[in-house]
Amino acid sequence: MAGKTMRKNYFISFSIQFKYILISVLPVLLMSLLCIYFVMDSGKSIEKQQTKIIAELSSIDAALKQIQAVSLPKDAQNQLAIFAKKLSILQDELNIQYYYLVEEWAKIRMQLLAVLFLGIICVSVISIIFSHRIAGPIFRLQKAIEAMQEGRDTGGIKVRPSDEYLALADSLEKLRVVLKDKGCLK
Image 1 (cartoon, one colour):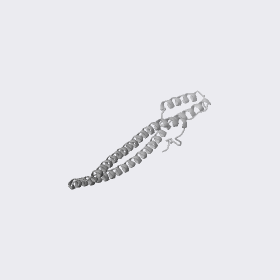
Image 2 (cartoon, one colour; image 1 turned 135 degrees about the vertical axis):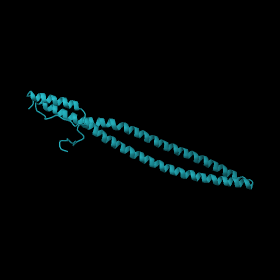
Image 3 (cartoon, rainbow, N blue to C red; image 1 turned 180 degrees about the vertical axis):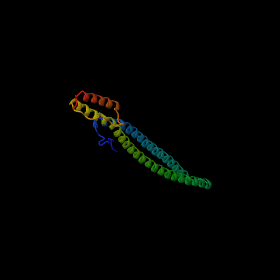
Image 4 (spheres, rainbow, N blue to C red; image 1 turned 180 degrees about the horizontal axis):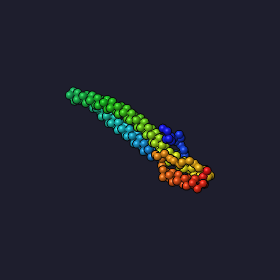
């Protein structure tokens, strides 16, 4: 990679870069936290619904037991026993389904947290790289201007093709050449 300038330090101007990183990461973080809140809230809603269903089933079961305590014809008692058994099976099935639902909900929460964490890291890295494309040229141009103010030649003023402020760097390079030709730079 001869002739290609490589980045050695991605934090050239921390205050400028931190501001751009914060502007990039903060919306992602806030939206992610909002999504997590809604997922958590939906889990609470599921729990409330399950509690309501259990209360209703318990109420039906208690009513059945009261009816069974009354002296009824054998046929009616058999029908009530069958109904009570089906109700018990339904309660068990609902409890099993609820257990699996809660387990799946916990997995989804963990996956969301992992995606949130990876998303924030990715946005942060991308923000660092792109903020360096602004801060790096600013730093380079500032050093060149300071050197020219002192009457020193900086050599060629160049920034990477992927960096920002290419036109400004070209204009400053033209100014440097003019000042050097006039003998103002050593």
